[in-house]
Each structure stands twice: as structure tokens, then as C-alpha cells.
Length: 118
Image (cartoon, rainbow, N blue to C red; front, top):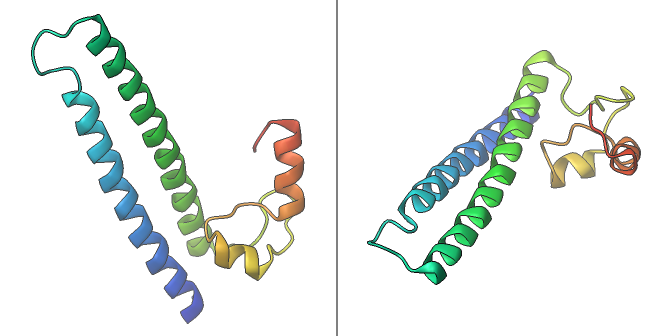
């Protein structure tokens, strides 16, 4: 594995750890909302909304963790930076900006248009 991939792997592992901490903190915040006594209907509505928002944020972070895990696996397999759809190299600039990219820009655009992801 090249030194460049080692640096990317370190970066991905740091980001993964930070995301895990954020998800854990969000989960704890969700558990605490509305547990401070007997709430009225306004408190219950506000607490439900807050839990929904936190759940959606943590779901996005869980997806990012999954993307990072796939990128780490691709590094181990020697396939990092290769589009999982067409097999072509993903532009280095895209990988620099989004090091857990699975697809080249063209394939990602097509996937988003179709609303599916392989």
C-alpha cells in the first residue's frame, strides 16, 4: 500500500471515530429529551420533533460511517479510487474532496437520477 493510501486511511479512520462519537452523543441526547418530569402536550410535541431531527442527523452520520467503511475496505483490496459502477478511476480531485466516494461523477449523477444505488 502506498504512503498516499496510508494517509487517506488515517484520515478516514479519524473521521470515522469522530462520527461515532457524534452519533453516540446524539443518541444520548435523544434519550434525555422529555425525561425531565411530566410534560404537557407542547413539551411532548417539541420533544418528538427534537428526537426526529436528531435521529435524521445521526442516520446521515451512520451512512457516512458506512461510506467510510466501504472506502477502507477498498483500500485494503487495492481498489480505492476506482468507481464501483463503471470500474474507471475516480478523479483525484473528487477523492481529495470526498475521500469516501464510491462512484465517479458521471455514475453518481446517473445513480441519483434513477434514485437507486448499488
